[in-house]
Amino acid sequence: MTENLTIPIHETFQKTIQGEGYWAGTPVDFIRLAGCPVGCHYCDTGYADGGVGLPRQLSTFDELINELFSPRVVISGGEPFIHKQLPTLVKRIEATGRKVSIETSGCYWQDISSNIWITLSPKQHISPKYPVVPEMWKRASEIKLVIETGKELEFYSKILLANNNIPVYLQPEWYSRNLTLPLVLELLQEYPYYRLSVQLHKYLGLQ
Ligand code: SF4
Image (cartoon, rainbow, N blue to C red; front, side):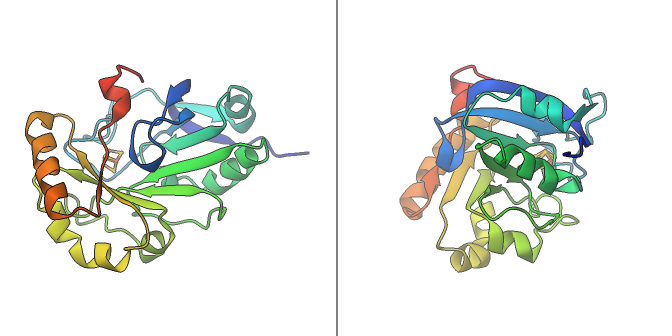
């Protein structure tokens, strides 16, 4: 019999699309796990202040799996890798025949199924206490840089050069998008091998 573990959830939603990065436009379900210590000031999932007041509930793996609909499931947060149960949850979802993507800031590591798509969005330029761990730089399937000032490219330049075998997305920071979208379009002229990620779900008014 499979163990029915629990995991803290911020929220889940189904039948939406992935709005960011390589899989943008793909129908997906989301599982947003609760908790993130990184404290980015522009966090759009409510963790700028550590998630004070955010809804948080323990869900069983069975509950999470029973509500899935789409062929791909995105596990985001918060920071998914802080949860020890993550690799087991991933295996349970994979056993239903679904693909899994995980979105992470990369500051924690756990050995995870090799089929998983990992979106690494480093935040060590904002929170130096939370650098990306070496395993995550090696394991990432894509890198998504949230662009706020343009200096992010300089900050990560060496590591981006070393990881030139995976796609790199420049994503305008949402709250100042009137400034950051033109900035990213300019950066793409300078760095034509990078790609634009625009948080399509927000432009479409989807969750
Ligand atoms: Fe928010 Fe992600 Fe930063 Fe955590 S790492 S505070 S979830 S943007």
